[in-house]
Length: 556
Image 1 (cartoon, rainbow, N blue to C red):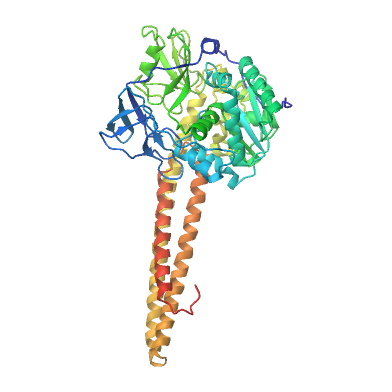
Image 2 (cartoon, rainbow, N blue to C red):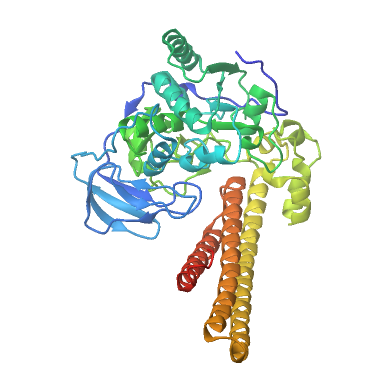
């Protein structure tokens, strides 16, 4: 077991996990109809690649990823495409459940690019957080050296038990999925971080690790670290500090300290995609709350109606006050039950008003400092609260607003019942919008500068041709033409170099923003990259044509 370090703050809210973790993991009934949102991941929404009336099988691609940060979407039932809109695709089921799988891959012998392609083709995204595409995350080794892969099995938020049940039923598969990621990122060490409130999952992992050790099935050694239950131990930064005593820098990523994190559900999906050729078409969802009579965890097809799913679990409409997607600390109340299950739906809480009563009326801050004492990122929530409401973005940046993980610990302990996390989320949204506007301005500036450079180049080429014509009386026709062509080629080389630099700059900006802030829309940055790539292709074509027209002695 790893030596446990510690992170600041944290709280101990009621766990309320026993209602769902005592029931067996079962398969939810096959839905007759699914609604598949095109945005189920960080970055750009997927683009439909089917038309109305198309017949699809389970696993058929219905929407392709758009741009660098995006993910493919697959049919989760067999049937006919019944509706396509700007936000979703609807499939009417035929009840046959016919499959279309990808070929089996032997991950131990397969090339890295083949594995990355399989992750991309399978639409795998992180199932425990913001849904960052796994094929992009696996390429972190191109910019960082990874020394440890962390399996984040803490599952610290109350009510949620999806990862707990995943580890109880599929410990070998989760560990094998971790070996695939360790191969891709080059990590020589794997460590599992799990809270001590999951004894059955811990026992299953210990049994599997001992079996693997006996049979030498572990290409990369795996360590199991059981940590004390405390919210939010499952935050990436908090778990890395707890397990490895490493501090992820402000504004940085776990990869900056040589660590990559994945949760058990994602690793299971990765193995199923590689070994079985099964794209991400279902996931384990925790169904709980006092307003249902049959709580538990179920394998659910993506696109299944939340209302239909809860009714199957014995929903009591008269006692239902609200349904929260996610946990009570970081989850989101659903405005309607006609919402589909997505790749990011790990838990549905059908709560009564007595179970999760509304917050009391907010009163003025008494400056007690409780929020500061429980912050797991060691921020100053009081100051952030004041500056957020004053829209003082300079001070918010100074006090590291975007380091806030929105865990809700500060709001939980606030005696004045101030919705601190709401303030932070609204401030982040406002700043993100400002960043989008800044990106648009940068894009316009880039286009203007490129146009000015093009006009200057064209003017230089015209001047070179004029000079060549003036010198024609003193030179032979062949020499004059060669001089003019050389001037033209020089200008085209300059334009090609400038276009190439613009593409590199746009790629770096897009990758950096996507990793630093997965929630930020990337439309303008994607457009800027596409424009730069188009300009580069045009410059390459012009340069190639000019080279072909040069005499053979001209060096390329």
